[in-house]
Length: 248
Image (tube, rainbow, N blue to C red; front, side, top):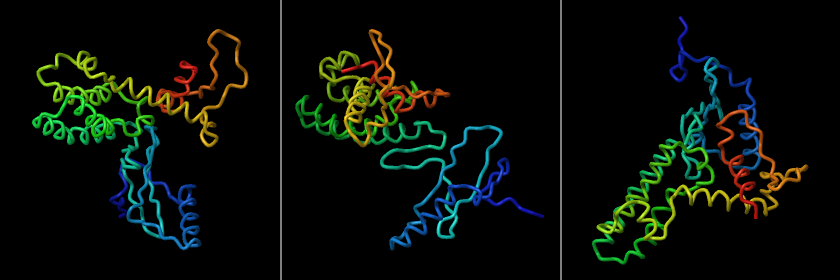
């Protein structure tokens, strides 16, 4: 009686990895590294299957140096938590948790009578920087709940900094001269896009329209065609729209 391997879901189809270009690329990478006298760390090499179809879910086994790689559903890469459903919920939770773990800095310094302006600067350097890490990648794809979770980090920080002077969030922002995090992330995305358009290595991400209609508000950059909301709200299409709506 044949048995289903423990790493393959019974409800999914198993497809032979030899039929995939992914395995072919891994084989080529293995040969290349050996030729360059380099060594791959197979134990730290994982793979992720991104598949949004309901009727054609599948599993496979990819190998490197004749060892089966582990399939993961999320992975931290360059400080970002990437999930196989291409949502940013896990990443948001990770950033929020890191930010709250640093709130003790503000509490301890407040107890020592540190000036409010100094506390604000410490907050922006050590806490706000955490929840804005790689924001240009994920800002446009956040859900309302994720935006609220991130904004709440700043609310909590301002309550600690202002104590009895804190009335409400908007009043605290005016007192401290800070902006809402969602506004800051939008500006970060716009500034990043503008810098990319001036760099020879990245300007191709934002192609200029070849034929521009002579209207009062012509769109300078070509907006990528999107068949799904997921792609429409992703980083590059979002930043193209920002560039078009905020011309220099």
